[in-house]
Image (cartoon, rainbow, N blue to C red):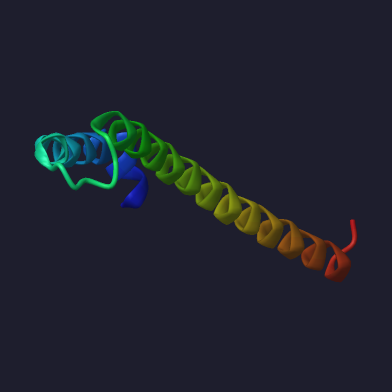
Length: 82
């Protein structure tokens, strides 16, 4: 389900739309902590971070899955040597 959310482009659409909604307020706020350019740059970095985290999580899960499968094969071989 999470993979579909990213692979379908839903994350990018919602994230980009959220940034478009917030940016005008950053541009108009004289007390803003960040300039509009810094906000855009930070937003891009956050998006990259989310994608890297998703890939790392998927890779970690896949590694766990493969290790579990390998362990099962080894146990089966030790019980039934060929």
